[in-house]
Length: 193
Image (cartoon, rainbow, N blue to C red; front, side, top):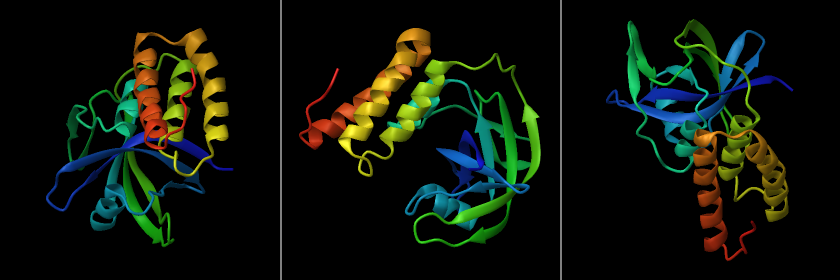
């Protein structure tokens, strides 16, 4: 399995408006590969403008917010580059699409790294942040997974939240759990504690 960098990508609409979305970039044989699902704004904009910025963040609220519809995260312009980065980014990478492999569900945009720049110190791993990230990914795949799989994963992830979460991670966890509870309500599935 390849290394996947979980980040927030910025693409640009044809009018030049930034669009941010969580995405795992696959590192493989000198490329970073963006493989957004069809249909998505990220796919559409990347097809129209073959440049993107990957922002690497440690604030779990950003991933949780993006998968629950909160998209108003502050952006910072990058000198000499069209797609801004998240202001909260620890680092960002500027990526240029070198080639595209078409696929009916997830085309693969093979990107070359133009530049990587650091902005703030990384202060180490945190299990609760990783748990929020995994729960956020689950929340984007509710229609693809069984209830048993979702419940099993969440029960395990809850351990990391209980043991290692700070205020920001608990807030992020609650955002994702609210989305999952809403899905269960719409599907008439009993919620678990």
